[in-house]
Length: 154
Image 1 (cartoon, rainbow, N blue to C red):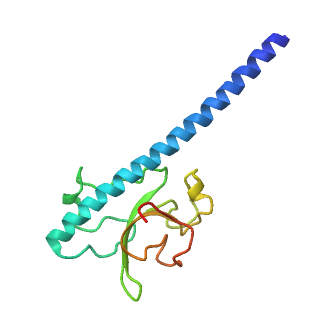
Image 2: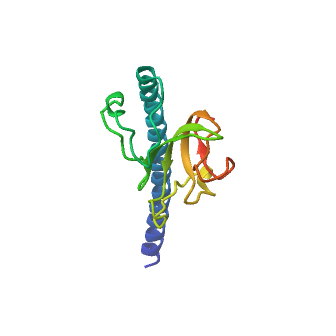
Image 3: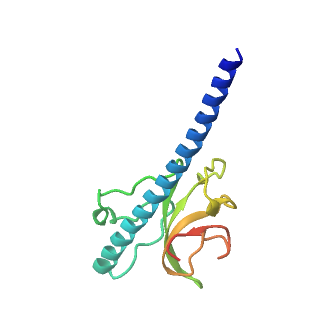
């Protein structure tokens, strides 16, 4: 009986170690995919800018009209992290900036699924992972520049 309990304990320990490693690999894969997609968006926006002499107007958690033709695959992908969504921000006014954000909460703010990464430890509804094109980018248009967020190319 003792031998059986020892074997069960060893199997349980190994299963825990394997599960933790799988989670770590999965989180890294999400981040790698996000970086790849941000670079793809950058290329698409450069082509868009060259053809239109301006960046597309701001949209709320959606793709700017006409951008599909510049994206490989022809569509705006879902975010790589579970529950995440890309958001094009072209903010005008006194402190303009242009970026693509990856948001981790739905519009209600009730359902947030933040990455299990050190850079996301302080994230809240307004936080995002983002790629800055120009200006003083930030995690959310309604928040100050120092609000928790993760700029991948700053």
